[in-house]
Length: 485
Image (tube, rainbow, N blue to C red; front, side, top):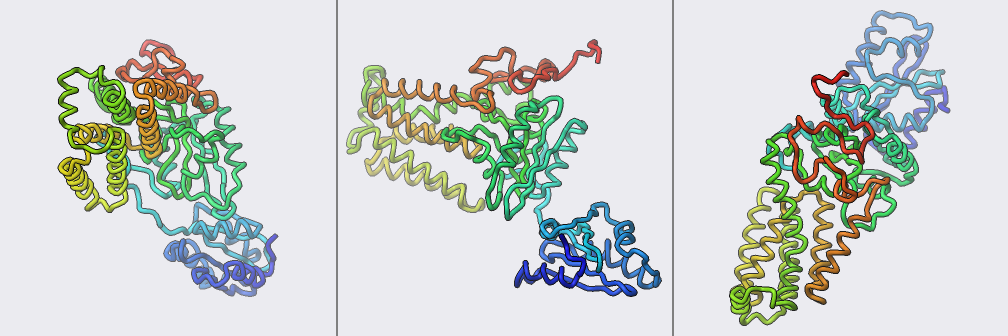
């Protein structure tokens, strides 16, 4: 409970914030009453404080109007749409840190709070982690309200609901669960909200924190949540029946559930002709298998089962390997690690020089390794094709899953050849089939198989009349013109 004596209240607040220099307080005498307002200068705007409070107070002092009830007069007359009252210190500290100004009236245990937050985000810009070829250029930002607005302006249905949960003892981060009430699985929504409320941690700084707590079994290297900074993709997911989680101060939102097929799709797929997208999706699917399995297949065939390779090609490979002192599996392993280091450095180096250094590094190291006789030219081709195929995927967790399984296939092939590769492939498929989230299979619509679902080949938009049955019970996506509403 707040002490009605504002001097003692302000002293307590100052004591809590210690030597912090951004806490500003000011006492004002009006007739026989005293009011005080305080705010954190680092997150508040002086202009808004002047517009919404100081000008109003100044006008009343000049008119010398007596206040029978100063608290009620302030609460009813301050021109701010986001005005509320609080009656405990915990809410005061939260409001101050959120950019609100708190107004104390002597003798009153309730505090008026008005929003005067400063603009501390970078504004709505183009997505940086997802290249946009065709489609909307805006992206989510660190401003939570703007992120909600980017979804609201696309989906103007009142059935689009946001449920807020505060997570983090110290950060008190606002987490919003977005879903369409008559489309999404409400049991899944309730389950997510319950798990969010159970999170007991000092702070949540990004949506990646939430991912760890919502997955009970996180041993799989492949992600079961899809993250994006594109509002159009988030809205597409909501319309399909998925759930979107937005975390305050994070430009990346979580799409639940994240299925394997989602990482082979792109939002641009819906903005182009279906027949053209079919070819693109086939290329993406082939690229996935190439980047995961190609090094393992090469090692298995050249080391253990060369009889499968045509004689002319086998002779060419043998000639290229002449003078190379290392076994094929070690060549592949060393070059994979080298290219992964180059790729990681390309990501971490500033954009101005990153791409150039990555290309030059790959060319110089590859040429030098072949000239020195450390690796054969065909190994450079194999690793180059493997690495280029992996560049089609941008989701960080999905790329990391590909890396893990690439090494697993390579090790299995290096030990048992084709037999080891086949065994590893069976384990790989079984592992993906065993993954699920809230009863939804990770490999849907392939396993289990759902007929007429949008998978590799995309139907024209005017023929996709139903939502995925494994995501929503409300399957009607589009009605025929002659069908009654």
